[in-house]
Amino acid sequence: MNRYSDMTCEACRVGAPPASEEQIKVFLDDNPDWVRLVVAGEPRIQRVFQFGDFEQALSFTNRVAALAEEQGHHPALLTEWGRVTVSWWTHKIRDLHVNDLIMAGKTDRLAA
Image (cartoon, rainbow, N blue to C red):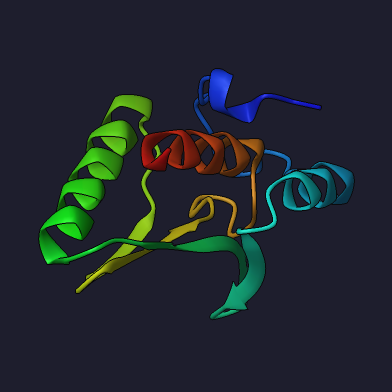
């Protein structure tokens, strides 16, 4: 099993190869709280994190934002009272890249 949370994102460019179907399947099998979906024709992985109130949700959002800046890879974040929805995909290739799996693993670690 890959420990994506221990990996570091690599610079991604237009034309970079997407994550393989096998990589995505293994990640989702190992991390069942993440779901694969398509938004505006682009594959994404998404998870909803639950919290006790807005302040906790906002604090988590800020930790994810700091991680995204550190790694140079940025998600869509929706912060609401008691929950945060995090969606990862790679804008440059309009698909899922191994960086998205890495960042999802790191996001899970932040929530633990």
